[in-house]
Image (cartoon, rainbow, N blue to C red):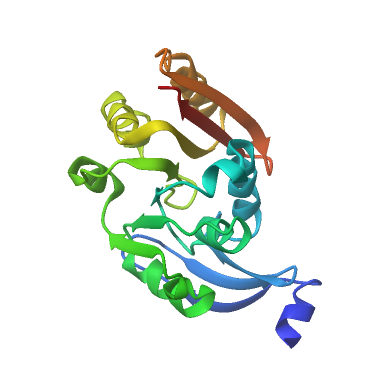
Length: 221
């Protein structure tokens, strides 16, 4: 409790480790809440939770509650899962795919992710999982970073088509991206401009927490 109070004055790091995939993973008290950070980016809770919550709000909490199955690609500490369960009161199935088992250990220890009863965690590469799964989903949340870097496959046509195929009728994709330079800005504009298919509606929510942009895709048929 003392650390939580003092964290309003200065961030207080309580745990730090490395994994085979991340140079640095830190759990920190900041402004009265526990957050999970990489070396240069917020991975869960804090600003990231605010960003994804806004995306979910744009979809509409009332549309999310009756959904049957949600897929989360990139779990980290599980802040978006906690938003779904604790705030939106979502009771359907959640499948979370995370490539780094060390991060899931931290999420269970510090953020009690293993107490979420309707959550199944799959330790796998998101690209491989998307290739293998035969399940279709009402909502697919894509939040995949290695520190501040986004894998190139996320923007490739094959992956985009596969994600859209896995989406149920009238489902949604919530894609969190980071814009740190002009080339990434051009990348996102190209992604949106080429998403011309008539059965989808796409919109962006730009410049969230300075460097993030949400891409929201709705399947109309």
